[in-house]
Image (tube, rainbow, N blue to C red; front, side):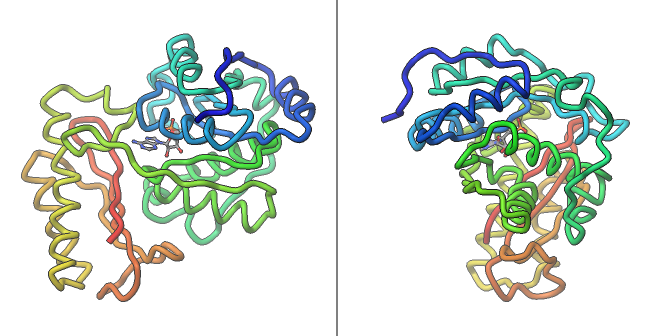
Length: 284
Ligand code: AMP
């Protein structure tokens, strides 16, 4: 049963949200950071928070600091009113929807960076992306003052980096990771899926099919990272996708598996269908 069944309220200013959170003495606060254009993946996080906390704050903020110069910041879908209804139905108490100038009244001179992993996997192709993510999550933790914060495994490297930031910097926040919600076809739900045509979307189901095929081969005794990666590459490319990277990493520290898998591992990948960049992962 979710704890809050009332109406939700939109707060636009960071200071106003911080004041609200400071006043909630004795009540547990769950935070669900998002960039909006909400789908069932986001809603699963909001519902989880609403079950576990007295108050659920959903932030909706297309964070300019995590987009590169040639990325989709301008065209990223924005639909606050529709999102607000979905948040309310899922049990949110507060929707925090700040303007960029409120989150960044002056250019940041202080960033949170993971010096080991920021330039690996997605970070290798999106310079500065993870510093933008970690810095905005640190700000959101300090503004919303949650005791728990909810993130999807969908963004596997991001979740790992947020857990590490929270541990390294002693944020008094419990980071909770949630399973990836997928379409019936297996395609991981993403706000960016709507950039794709119907046929690209259907071709993109090859991503999860390839991941599952590799996992099956691994279960049958294949431990070579190169061979497992080749299975996925073939599946995606034969459906018309373009691989950006496929890597297998140890789950514990996200360091790459060089040759043979020897501990719990995860496949991480990014690829393009048409102009749309998609990411996915699967734990082995
Ligand atoms: P975004 O709005 O894309 O920044 O995502 C906000 C949060 O929702 C992040 O923690 C994502 O990992 C999570 N998320 C996005 N897509 C999914 C999905 N398909 N299943 C579960 N969580 C997701």
